[in-house]
Length: 107
Image (cartoon, rainbow, N blue to C red):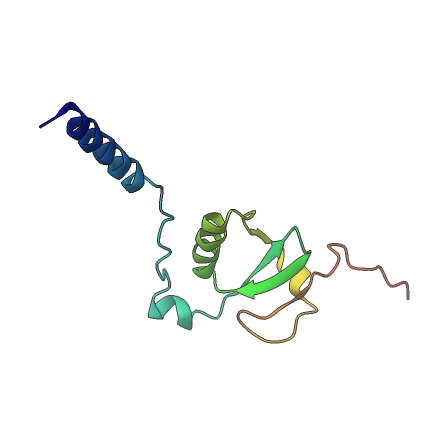
């Protein structure tokens, strides 16, 4: 082999190694079991960027955060359930977050 062929072969190998070392995002597997989905408990999750709240099953939060992490977005945080009190519907219902403090009504 000539020197040029050896140099081209080495360059091809280096480019192939660089191409395979690209970081791929983690797969976000479904973490909810049938038992988890039958559990009536819900948590309230707040997105700080949009100030929107979502009611979720507890097992769905890591799954949603995995998807957001792969997209480079800020992670969701669990907040008090009273912030979801204005959101009608069950699991995966979204809407604007209610204020943390409830207004005091004087009687």
